[in-house]
Amino acid sequence: MRYEPKPLFLERMQKLLGKEFQEYLKVLEEPLQNSIRVNTLKISPEELLNRLKSKGWIIEQPFKDYPEIMIIKNDLAPGEIGRSLEHLLGYYYVQEIASMLPVLALKPGPGELVLDIAAAPGSKTTQIAAEMQNKGTIIANDVNLKRLKILASNLERCGATNAIITRRDGIALCKKLKDAGFLFDKILVDAPCSGEGTIRSSAVTLQMWNPNTIKSLSKLQKALLASALEILKPNGEIVYSTCTHAPEENEEVVDFVFKEFGNEVIIEKINLPIKCRLGLTGWDGREYSSEVKKSCRIYPQDNDTEGFFLAKLRKVK
Amino acid sequence: MSFIKILNEQEKQEIEKKLNEQFGINHIPGLIIQRGEERLFLFSGSFSEKDIKNLEKCAFIERMGVYFAKIIGNNIRLSIEGSQILKNQITKNIFELDSKQAEEWMMGRELGIKTGRHGFLIMKHGSDFLGTGKASENKIGNFIPKNRRLKEKG
Image (tube, rainbow over all chains, first blue to last red; front, side):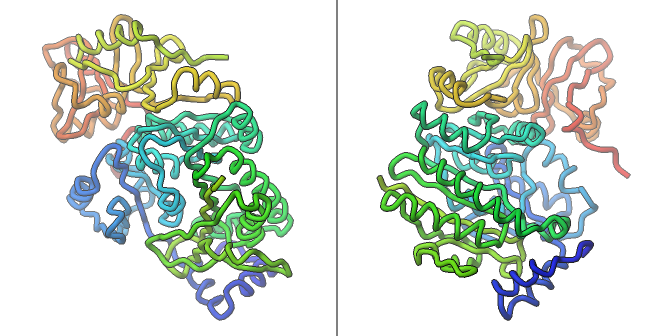
């Protein structure tokens, strides 16, 4: 590890993980698996599998129900996965497995109206477009111009013809969309977060980690998720996700909107093809609704992935 | 607003007519959005023109759909995505590359090939559609953008 974890970070993770803490620390030292997602808008998993095998790549498809998710098992030169012809032609997207889970939970379908509120760099937006078979509409929003360019480039390479890219602060966008009468079938709130789950791919997160940032992000995330719920159709679904372990940015946010929206919103159980832990029902002296247990915590040591959190909510009124 | 122009039915038909003459393409499956004088985007979403106008009141629209073609004088050049999206309709002016030529092509190099043809050709290798080249007397000019090029080996 190039950066030393701060003592308070270690203390919090130990509190979260108990006797598994050492196992967690150990997996942080290990490189991530090379995973890709087949872009089914352009090629079938079978066809890409045959092409990649013929290049000498050893491919594993870990989930029977999701043949588009592949792990490359052999050692490749640095950057080789992103430089291949198949990547340049948009036949696959280099994406960490944990980052594929929010869209698997959201299950967007052809013909739906979907909002991806913090879309850049576009891994999940391109996955949504593939699930929708380019039918229906995705509003892919982000506020950062530099990141929007990367989003546009990725949507183009993947041939996501049903996406509209917008630039606005997410909370302000939701208010405007509400005033204009837009209501969505599905919304993905993949919120800006402190990134504790990404340490394996981005060790600098350890250096940037700060408890005050967690507090301010939690406030932002609550406002973002609450704003998004306002523009969900009755019976519409929203997935809230982060790549962090901090309960203030996860269960606390879900608990906040669950209580704020009263009987308008229910938390749904999520079925994912990897090991998930139940959401916490309390942290740091605060108690959360027992319904928040339906959220999923994903730790790096459980599935050899990055860390993630996700919750799925349905608007019932 | 707006630098986004949605082509009307007549304008779309004109584009389709040119694409038919050049490559045998009959139908563009969605709205065509024009940006600037030349760049054409294909939007297959379910949003109507009215929805799009309403959305523009909510946020700045950076882009709609995928860049698929460029108007060059009286002709149209398809991008990589344009050639892939419309591949099932392309029936003429296709140039089949061998493996070596396809690699050179994807490195962004012009190909020193006498095709006996002039004008835009769809470049194809096996099942891969690789955009459009411009054939002249002794070569095929390359338009693969830098960020989509294969790097030199070694």
